[in-house]
Figure (cartoon, one colour):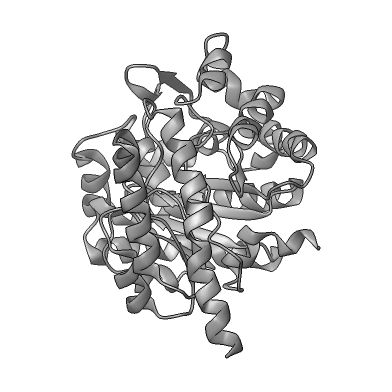
Length: 355
């Protein structure tokens, strides 16, 4: 079997599969004891910057669970860091930039020239990870959308109401678009480098899409995601776009992506009806369901499988990243259940095709 026939890549192309593939956003993370053992020795950014460590933690969930993809261990904020912003990740606070973007001059100081050279450690981690995976599963590379990156860069850290970045786009739209254009070019180059290093699929995270009005989303996020997808499509790997908190998924279809990520606040069956058969869908279990009992986990996973139905092109995932205190045994329950239960829907599909 050709590696391109792996179940996840086939699902991205909406080809028929024997079951629904599954992977989990943030699957290489703090819920795993083996990850915590590494994290006790090294701070988060050291792990991101050290290819051997990044490769080690990337393959940890693959060694433990029957997942259908690995996702390279890194952080979306390595891009602004490579542009010259000093980044610190504080355990109790999250990511913090020493100086935030607050003026046209601070945008001009961002250095995108030869940015991929400063991100070589990510590409080295990808190459090491591919060797360790031995073609067992595809490797997903990712980046933050320009809007989500800009939100962190202008706020200087995470935020509850995002008043700085939203005031920025309202009061200085030309400067905001200058920043977003710069980020779109940097992210495009970064992702092309990831594909060249060995990534088999790409996911673009627009974590803060939902804080924008529909018209602001069009201007300050959607058009830049479109630009990135257009810039990397010639590489012929599937592109997943995950925009958290939106309601109009037809807009994500417009990006030209192959797979539309769906968060847990939407019924995946309704999204399927909304966008038709043009794109595969990924999602969308509420991450907190994994804190419940076995019966509830299976019930909610079954609900999603039933809602999507018998058509091809479903990739099972959470509706956002797995939470740090998630019980490991519940992840195993979910993975085993989806792999087993989803076969029923694909057998039905196969019968419908062959009758």
